Length: 221
Image (tube, rainbow, N blue to C red; front, side):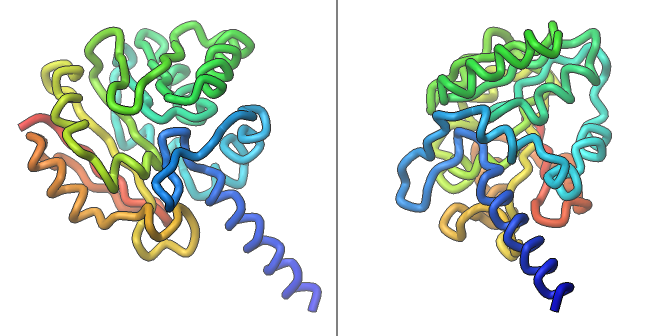
């Protein structure tokens, strides 16, 4: 009985964590934006060790194979889970931690200062414009579910913000994942590939080591 209780508790924790680990660009099933007014509270989930176990940030960064001087935009950065790691991995580069939620942007700015991450810069974005201050080598989007479901022409416009040879990496909840985004906010990787192709991108890599998410990398055609 004790084992069953422990398993049940573990499942509840994972489910709660999965629902929480959505950046401020994610949207609710009703189409409205999720509210992220308490960044410190969200950080308990976004930056937890339990997330590390399945998000595999070290493996994700390794797969991206970025040079130390790369300029990266983490769009939908949330509390900076990937932004901070990217900045530390790119000591001669720069990371723009981009979010639409002002409270998250303040948190990102405070985190960079508190942790002395001088090459991590918080950026206040609009929902249809990341407002990047310069072209980047890579755009990373992790669990930015709303853009995956309703991309519009966002990615076509994003092309002008990439350096020559720049890439867009998308990590998003699998359709059949037992945890993660709401069913209404999930999309098949085949649809993402088609949407990206329609907006001028070519698939250059597909990784399958994440248990609950697909991981696609695109470049401009």
